[in-house]
Amino acid sequence: MTSTFLRAVRHAPAPALLTGWLVAAAPGGVHARAPELTACLARLPDDPDGARDYAAAWAGRGGGAEAARCGALALVALGDPGDAAIVLDGLAHAPGDPAARADIADEAARAWQADGDPARAFDSAGYGLGLRPGDPGLRIVRARAAVESGHAPQAIADLSPLPDTPDILTEALVVRASAYRRLGRIDLARADIDAAMRRAPQDVAALLERGIVRQRQGDMPGARSDWEQVMDLAPDSRQADMARQDLAVLEADPDAP
Image (cartoon, rainbow, N blue to C red; front, top):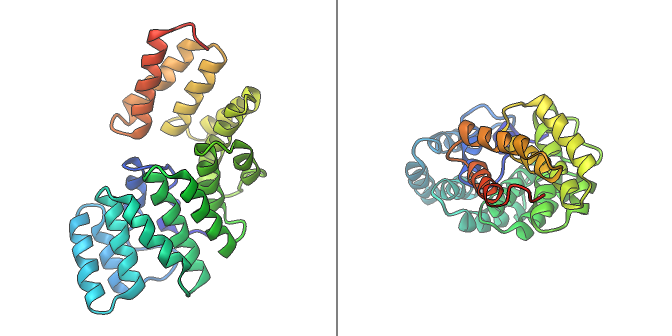
């Protein structure tokens, strides 16, 4: 089972990625952590520079892989997910506990997504699934990477059947809806996105996707309403930026499907 630390990171690229990632860095995850790792992770939400410095000092005292992991997550928080992903991938491939390495592979995949490299995100998530087959969180990460890299059928395969973990089912539905839409299966996309919206009516990723599906169905007022809600609920998010772009296109050509 994926840790609390990872379950809160389910909505993709930075900076929106960081909100859940850093909140989950607080003590209390499923896997027991060394006190120094807990202390380092606890600095991430409010003081990523401090977390990076703490990790560096800890590494100098022999902190090893755990210090490197916290330092890499601090790099994500500081806007350098590419370098962080390289470190995390290396840690995931190093000898050690398979469960911990699977968690780190998940973190590496999300860092690659934040860096705009879905192909490497797909590879990292796939490696994690080799360590922990069937893990629902890793299935979602790989499916999202597959959608972003133009391999929608793989995303649908990864998410069929849907994971039965309640706290990530909404994200799985949104990702699969996006995959169906890209394949032109608007009926199936609409079924998935409606199911996601029933579970989480104010989820901005779900609202963004439903707006796109509504646009494809010719429901321009509905699309506009969804995208405006995204901007109201999370004005500084990546989803809001995408909603603004979609609204600009809609304003330029209101009759375009």
